Length: 545
Image (tube, rainbow, N blue to C red):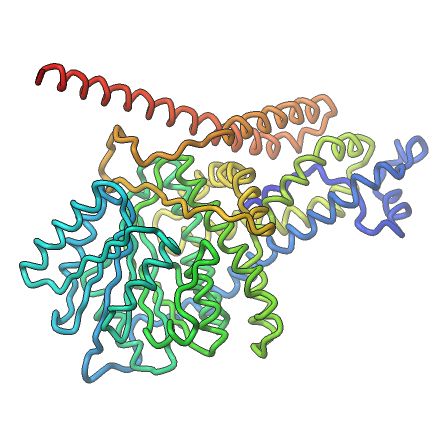
């Protein structure tokens, strides 16, 4: 998400190949300086790694153009219904994994209870790992629905071994369905979901059907608008491009339905990564199972409304996908799948490496700008412009195209949110770099849930209950410190007449400051809410006494 920020900044300076760099560099200088200054070994020591990183990041930017091209090529070929149908419907198990989800579990079960499917062919499993009052509340709720005749079962674990993957695998022990549909706690699938997806499994080669995510609180605040755009790029463009071309793509952990025998054949749910869905997806496709994407079916869900909640979710995905790359990428590259599938798998599983690379770029920016002071306009045309096209333009095109496809009558609105989207990408740099490095160095961390509050599109609620909030610790202070560093770089850019760099540097300033200040403000508000709750409790206790 951040590579486009790195490679779009017009403060680039030099050649990529040390052997021939001197001659090439000299051609990039204005006549004003070529007789005065020659690049020194120290300059090359800065410029060569800087541009090496930028070229790598630009490759991911160019890949986005490839995704846009693939989308346009295959968008009309996406299925809306199964090409063949069952004469006798198969038995279906619906798994609903939850963990401390007291705000959303009731609406989830209510929505699932309305599912249009014969009850004698349906089993619903509530896989509850909760450690708070969600446990007794959900158990009572399930008992009430079961009394009405709904085929629902409550399964509670006293430990969280394997987290979500462990809960799903545990549920399979008693699952009776030939296919298994999975929905996270904040999802509200349409009532005809099973009728529209189950018939794809009439083809014995089909192992999984994934549907598109929608959002109940897309317009809640700027953060949710940005998140929706980021996810739209994945669900509108990437899934279509990959599935249409016959390349590997992933089950997204929810809003999908899978064949039981495929799960078993692929080795079941494994919990050595934080993205067990991607892990199982690649293992299954390596076994020859076919995946289907049906974007015409939309499953509504809730987006995180708080900055740190968003960052934690994104860092979990970044770490998990990097773990999957470390676990399976060499197996994929050594397999007999087509070369184009291998290349796409590489780009799909490794993009989060851009975050630690962005840290490197950030550290080199100031010395590169100092060297850049002596360089002329010609190098901007030769080097800067291609990199800007490969990165900055690619990110703009990628998300604007996705937004246009979903909202053809209001697609220009996407341009209003592009600056915020880029700032949000910057805001993920530190926490996602930490996540990627943890994955690379096998540092184990627990599964961090993303709090959900049943916030609908028309609701503007106060998040007074703070029990699910996670403390951000040192992160916002680090973000504010780095943002202040970029304020200094912006001042230097102005003093050195490098005005074209200023808008891009301000994106870094705004991104880091947005993340740091908004997190601290949200935690301050949470502290005030906690104090109010404690005061009310003490007052109530005093009155009883």
